[in-house]
Image (cartoon, rainbow, N blue to C red):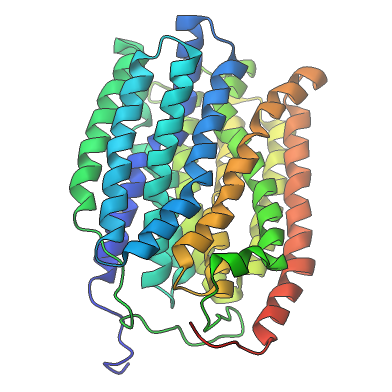
Amino acid sequence: MSQASAPPSGRWVQLWLGVLCMVLIANLQYSWTLFVNPMQKAHGWSIAEIQVAFSIFIATETWLTPIEGYIVDRLGPAIGARLMVTFGGVLVGIAWVINAYAASLGMLYVGAAISGIGAGAIYATCVGNAVKWFPDRRGLAVGLTAGGFGAGAALTVVPIRLVIETYGYASAFFWFGVVQGIVLLIVAQTLRAPAAGTVLPAPATAAVPQTTRSYTSAEVLRSPAFWLMYVMFVLVSASGLMATAQIAPIAKDFGLSNTVILFGATALSVALVVDSVMNGLARPFFGHVSDRIGREYTMGLAFTLGALSYWLLAVAGQSPWTFVICAALIFFTWGEIFSLFPSTCTDLFGTKYATANAMLLYTAKGTSAFLVPLANVLKTAAGGWASVFLVAAAMNMVVVVLALFVLRPIRMRHHAAPLATVT
């Protein structure tokens, strides 16, 4: 490789710093389920009322990311990432302290909104950095970054649960929020994006073609490919968020919450750790696969496996170890949306505005969050979780069809169109 085409120095350091930031905000989503039942017991709020806070977190974490991404792109590579992650770290710390002292649903919802804004600022920045630094390994880089968010909670699931059981859920909110916020402030000061011209476009391949033009967000919003990916993202994300938010209530309904299965750990504790690890591993694994065989074929593979995983949980997930295994398979086959879709978006629409454009697509996660409470409605109406899992399986298969027979032809026509002036 010639000096002119050599990857810029320091990009792996920036990638791993981004991964660390994602690990530090993972608890905001993936440990939430641990707080649900203790809050219900302490305040008498219904599960559905508490889960509104989860939906608010997901909505604010996602829907504001295009603005945060635009600010990062606008401020430039030297200060954009640093300032945005600093901002996010402050909000994350404040929000969890609010959660610790929230004595009303209104205050709980305020904390959820603030934590969502902070987490979104960090998420947008780190994913944007990954797609910019690694055009040659975009799927892998975004997968590793998003994997920090998916797997990061595995490090703290057991400590958080122990703190909740020993000192109460409020103490867990307070101390984990303060520590995470402080570390984020320190790490933020070292983040930067690549300067213009330091990262060359990746060589074109048949499996993963990439545009040489950078599309503005206004142009992206006029693209049929964007809206197709948005619908696909919503369908898979809704099924996955249902599992994320409801795994503890599901285990309780199956009679498995306090069933000890491994070294004194319960089926729920083991499932939460394994699920976080599998969710995190899915993102770099399928991202790397997509760099090799293409984004749509990888989507077809992953989401077919996801549909099978939901079906298995419906028919065989009532015993402790099958519950752990089936839940792990579900988490392994939905987390990859956070590597596949940002990578596909940047392949299609270029790198200059990549942070804002990828975050426009990421808002689909916020849309999908409002489908999560419907899982409880369906479960109540049907008298069990099996119908919920089967609907989730069907949603995944719809996305398989869309990826292979609609998105792929659209993407091929997009790259075959005459290129406009590179911007």
